[in-house]
Image 1: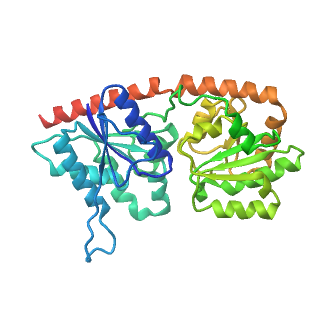
Image 2 (image 1 turned 30 degrees about the vertical axis):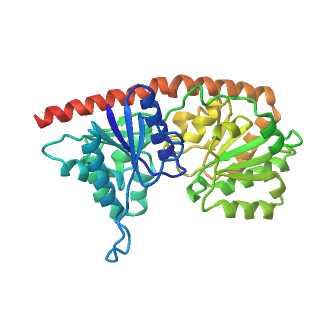
Image 3 (image 1 turned 90 degrees about the vertical axis):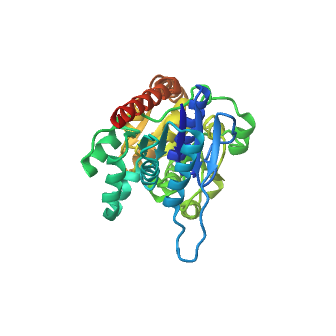
Length: 380
């Protein structure tokens, strides 16, 4: 198949999943055309089967803001024509599904171009924050030829908000060979020079991820006599707040902010526990990546996280903002190495048996084939 994929080229779950999906599809013999404003995250190598088409923005004095939705639709239609695309697969409903639908309609009747929209979470919860987006988001979802969601929780949330439940749940995934625990002695020594246990947090540092809670947890863990360190991977609006809170609590010497990193697996390979105290997570990709690297996860019991992390078996779940319980769980795991390692082994087994690419990518391919067949039948 010739597949067009559009993602936000940013440091977030939807961009990561879309990029990894494209690479996995290419390895299975399909040709993937990424259509985006910039090279998507984690898409580090292009080839004959993985191509990139940059959306060019028009500069015109009449427009106070550049019309990205229209520019994207135009590029989608152009790539569909020149590369003979079989379908468009867009990640994140707004504005990508709207652009894809415009592209599809502009090519009728001489070309059939099915549109598949994958919902990742904030494209749905965004509506809760601004109801003015509800009609156009509902339109984008309802007019798509196929819709998927990354968790059962997100499917239900979409049904509750939009009264639309014709959604296939296809979860996020990990490549078992790429995400496994590998010795990183130099990195471990750099981050924990005295052999201290390591707490790690990975996110885009938006308020919803609550990175400041991680600093609070570190302070309480150390207050319990466990001399841990915290490694903060990523960047975003809340980074300065987290750094400030670390100074206020007197633990800044034990917090390392490493910014965005191209190889998350390196940091997970030296981690002892992952902290994910988010107030919203449609799936929790960082949790899945940690589990695959034998890292127990301490997280909030929200959204799709309970579908990924088994409380008491592969990690520990708490209510949002319950820093005291998260701290107690972290201190306990860091103080009981045998228990932590056993939980890590269960975590790896769970991640690979439920979310490996060998299980999930065929679900996408089958969904593509079904949507293409239905679109051809409908077109007569």
